Image (cartoon, rainbow, N blue to C red; front, side, top):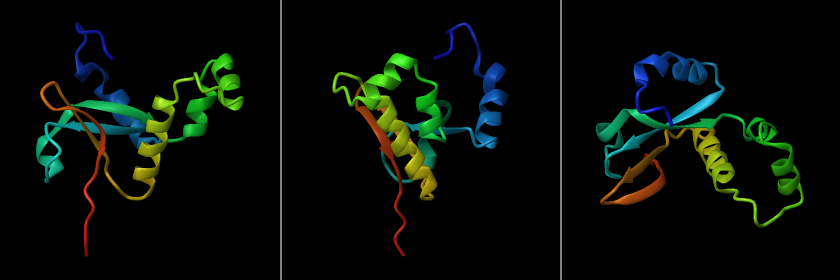
Length: 116
């Protein structure tokens, strides 16, 4: 989350650099989970995932890493699992999107499967 006073244009090049360097995976918001997803894509509303879940985990605080290794069920793995899903979808050639709207709710991932 950026401070409400700051503008996206100020950071856009940094986000693009992370994507182009292969460090981060941007997943853009769509207004509705309907085909074509690209038609309702918000280019300035996105979630940024790590392209490597292992590197993401290494950035966690030491206590969290120990809890993950010990399989502590009280650790919230939601963000970790979402990152793994984003990484796998991208690695398999999909362009993932997410949908979050007040009147619809939230969908973590939406993809288009092309049939031959």
